[in-house]
Image 1 (cartoon, rainbow, N blue to C red):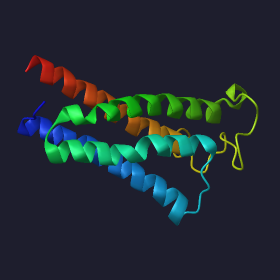
Image 2: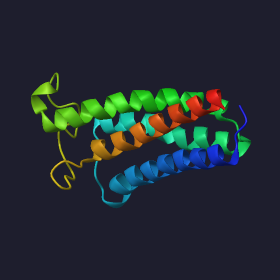
Image 3: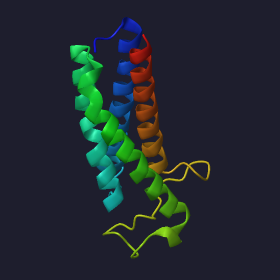
Amino acid sequence: MKLTKKKENILLGIWGISVIATLGSLFFSEILGYEPCKLCWYQRILMYPLVIIYGTALFKKDLSIALPGLILSGIGMCVSTYHYLIQKLPTLEAGGACGIVPCNFEYVNYLGFITIPFMAGTAFILIFVTHVTLLKKSRGK
């Protein structure tokens, strides 16, 4: 489905969120030296392709190309939510530590609730909700 200029700008916003989230995760690991836990790696696996998926959809001005992004961001919301919950409620983690770095370890905790999985989850939610909204607007025209 071809995009109007307004919908194209919204798609640019989605792409921008995925770029910022990707660069943020690389900043934490490569600049600050924070070792990602297993769940962080899963979130990266789900986030990094979104830059390419939404970038391609934006370049071709075709939202239908971005369907895999909707699926990946939906799964990413679930993984990030679970990861955040085990950070705040460690008893939810099944089987103890999930790797070299425990998944309930908090490298950052801004304002008492903003952790790395919280930030990733926020990005996944923004991407997912905005994509669904674009799809609904495209159907209604």
